[in-house]
Picture 1 (cartoon, one colour):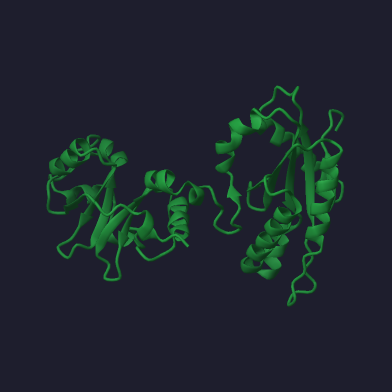
Picture 2 (cartoon, one colour):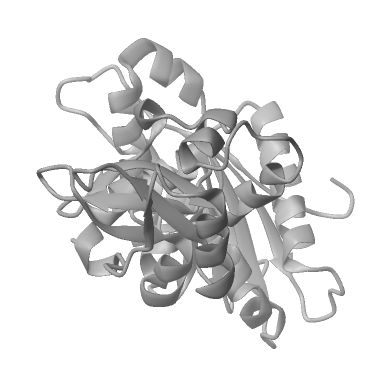
Length: 292
């Protein structure tokens, strides 16, 4: 497990809330950094100011030239500052950054003193695998598709695309709770992974949607693989929830060498076929055809 301390930058640019705004701008402009941590006299982080906050400084007249005046104007208080401990998992930090749409996260030790900063830029540079991994199912996430896009579109053989959607997933969450829902997602991901080749791609595309990209796969093999996946998932059982059964609706499309469409357009066709499978009664596979 990768910890926050393995990915953070310990060389943090910090400033006191009693310092002037001009001092802050000097740090941001002359040091070429994207963020500065505001700390109190005990070296506890109070807030974080990033480059995106700077235009707001010039858009209004601030009452005073101190950092604390800027924080008040930006409505940034110590109470709403998000931090992460250095010994926590990098996945926890990633989830925080994703949930709150932030690119920087102050890192503190057990005494809540500032020890570093975690930035999305550092994560992308040093731990790309973590960035492109879904924290729940441990398979690739949707961002990973952008990485393999060029590879897919340059392949000289047919590619099979499957869009797999768990049937009645909202009902499962409502009836059994989200913890069981999470367990279902994990088991489904594992079943799909073991049903395809090791070099094929598996992506958690949406909440309960999975995208499988199968290399060297044609119209003859794709339905066979889809049926194997569907059957394998249907066999999932829970010892303490014997009445819980899992089924999936699957749509497929075969991207041919003659195709001029992008991988995203190909995925859309598989998605359209998947919705036809839903309308056909669920728990089935439909292959996209020009007549469908």
